[in-house]
Image 1 (tube, rainbow, N blue to C red):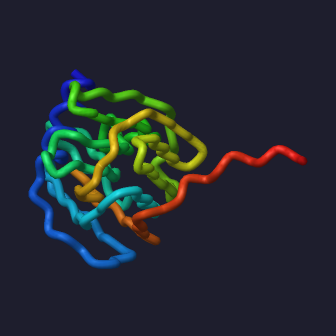
Image 2 (image 1 turned 120 degrees about the horizontal axis):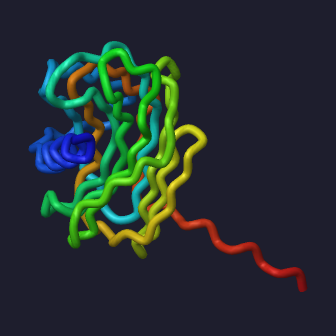
Length: 183
């Protein structure tokens, strides 16, 4: 049942038609039970999005309360992201879930748990060659993804109220080079 909820929520969020935002640094995401809310920005090429999420209220519903971020291709199918998912409205821990679809099917992986009372920093980096990294507090996830020449960076929530803060987005970042050997 849990994976079905993740799949439904991930699909719902991936296909949302979201308005673009400029350089907003805060987002008060408030979604009634079984509804979602989001804000997005246009991305191109190598991209890094980052910020922090704090739970304000978890609500009861058919869909579990969750919040996260996603990089979505222009087709609405190819995407890479994460969710902080609360199994119930009185949960004391979020499941940290990484989701992605390279165009060959949706995949989800729970990579850890984080107390719901914390402000949780995150960052996602997608390089031009498709190398991707996702960091949520102390959890790190690296994957070979696909390049996204254009798309959206989406910040979202469902069935709860969450505060997104310190949001940043940058494009055309440089991948760190390997250290050179001494001569």
